[in-house]
Length: 393
Image (tube, rainbow, N blue to C red; front, side):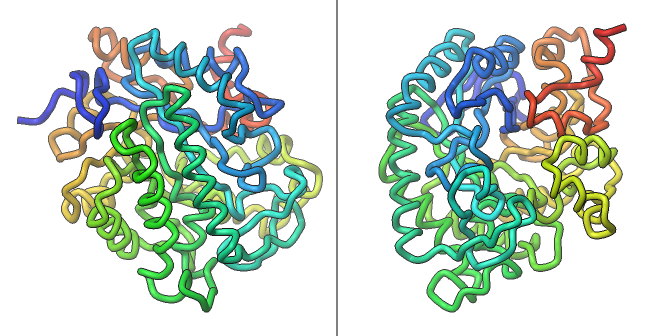
């Protein structure tokens, strides 16, 4: 019998009140890299709205690992605010996750004031600088930073640590053969390209033990030539499962650097995105190359499901299904098909109370139309502009 998506469940050492997860989507509410009341309110809305677990997005392990300077770097100076956030979420009965990551080539080095790092040297379309190839000493330092970040978040009261291994972030850049041209032990064969992912997962688990659940966001496919394919990702996740350091995997896809719409699907808000970008990027997006960056993919409910089923067949560990989930029927079907959790982003941005509405039977579907006009608002406070428009009428 399939589990009830709205009943309590175990996630490693943590019990969550139901199997719904607010996926990590950058909140745009930390202008000084600090926890703000606005950030707390953002997560309180979905926590009070019924989700089992809400995920704080893009908690950087180092300064050069931020996507840009407004992102939180986890450390002693941000711990107090993070603890305040965790306490607020726990007051609702929900649990809190922190998405722990190093943005790698997705980082804007010019904004951060320090060059971005990647598996191999490459030009950055974000900063118009060269991204530096990470040295082995960098990787030792960054792995230690993951450990320190994990320690701080557990001390602050976070229940789950989500390691970001997708979207062309640093670990993902090592996995992708088109981004990883290294000749050392971190490049070449798939096991060598997966070395950093496994190294970080092991180090974090050894640090936190059973004080928190440790999960990873992984890609079912990067969606660009030279990115991680589904077959390669199946092999990498099998390695991670065999290592035994993770409590669950969240199945995502696409590349923030090379093909973001592969993740989002639906309408492509090219003009809105261009208007929100710095001038050099804005101009670049109006070129033929820039227009190809935001590709068009038709939206349909649970659009990663077909690929995700291959992971369900191959792996025995808990899996979180993500990708355009709006409907109760889709959530319940995910349980029938063997998935353990469902993760939502835009649906909850549109309706923070959606889970409570579904539980109460007042709704069967969310009302998000996946116009993606929320995407460019990450620079000014991530929000549903359809909701803004309707409230202005």
